[in-house]
Length: 259
Image (cartoon, rainbow, N blue to C red; front, side):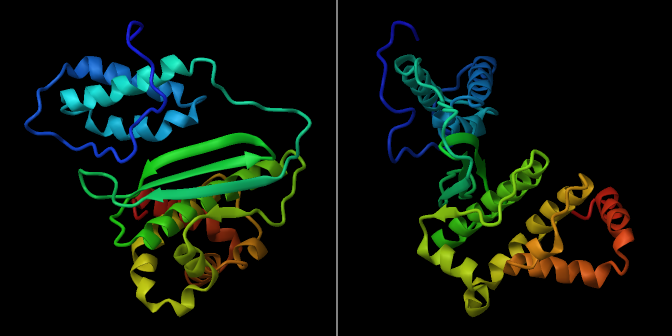
């Protein structure tokens, strides 16, 4: 791509990438090699995270249209080779997070994509772009699930930062969906969102089990501050009588594959 003209964005706004069954096939090994290189680069270039993950979904049978989308990312990288992350030492250390979702963006199965980033002061330290496990039936649901994924990452970060002497009582998570914020603030009043609770209960239990396996369980008071946290505690109280049996019970669930 050295002789190609650079471009200002990794993906054109409103781009819809699909399977393109009538398109001409390209070499699978070459396409996968390009994707692997881009995935490696996402560890320091969050600006190509979404577009790279989107193109990586078509590695089984790549077409010319998919290859053109990948080449656009390389053209973007050519013009932004000097772009990088900046970590000033004299800024704050407050933990904040932002979440967003691309509702029904995947043309394969109409699943949404969750995106979230975490900052320590002005320093970007964590980011992710991942397709959701289930099909969201509304924008509010997609945004709510994305915020839940972001919250899971924030809880893990806060637990690890405690080992270094940093304690956070309140961590703001910013979301641009008023409906998702309303559901988070008072889910009891939203009877039409019961399907969200049923569909994603397994995801929240997975998060809890993962924290338990790593012996990184948060204080009970932390979980009781949120609606979903209170529900998790209720489930645990109903299934586990003694606190000392908690890890063993979770390990049993893990080994049986019930998660």
